[in-house]
Length: 119
Length: 108
Image (tube, rainbow over all chains, first blue to last red; front, side, top):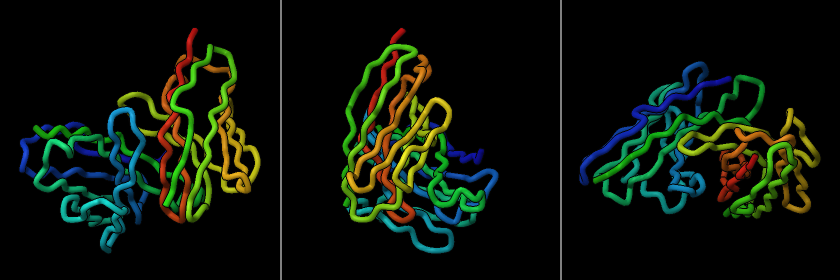
C-alpha cells in the first residue's frame, strides 16, 4: 500500500521557537495533503488542507499565521508551528490521498505522526 | 459543520462479535470511513462506504444508511490485537472529519 512518512517523529523545543514538520508521500504523488492534530485520547482534528502549488485552506479556528503550511512539490508538504507555546504540544499527523490508484478520493494514507512537546 | 457520535468505550471477549455505531450530522456527505488506531500509532484505513449497505473485508464489515445518517463497524472473531481505538469519519468532498473514537478492549 501507499506509504506516507513524517519527520521528525518526536521533537522537544523551547517556548518561542519554530518547529518544522515534513510530510512525504513515498511512492505516489499527492496533490492534496491534510494536517491533523490529536490530543491524548481524543479524536483527530482537521487543521488544514495542503494544496500543491497553491495556498493551504484552513479549518475554522485554526490560525494560519501560527501554523504555516507549504506544499512545495507533489510529494512534500511542511507544517511549521511558529513561536511555539506549551499549548501547541500535541500529536500532529499528516495524510495524503492517492488519487492515481483507482481507489478514488476515499482512501487516505496517514503518516506515523510527530509528537511535539513545547517546554 | 460536522458532528459525529460513537460510543467512547466497548469491551468484548476474544472470538466474539462487536458492533461500533456511528451517527453523524454533516452539511455535505460523500461517504463514511472507518479507521483503526493503536496507542501511539497513526490511524490505518479499514473501510469506506459511499452507498447504503454492507461492505465486507475479511473479519471487518461496515454498514451505511444514508437516510438514517448512521453507520457501523462490525468486527468478527475478535482477536487480542484488535484492541485499539476505532474512528468513524465523514467525507465532505475531499476532507474527512473524525468522530471522537471508540476504545475497544478485547479480553481473553
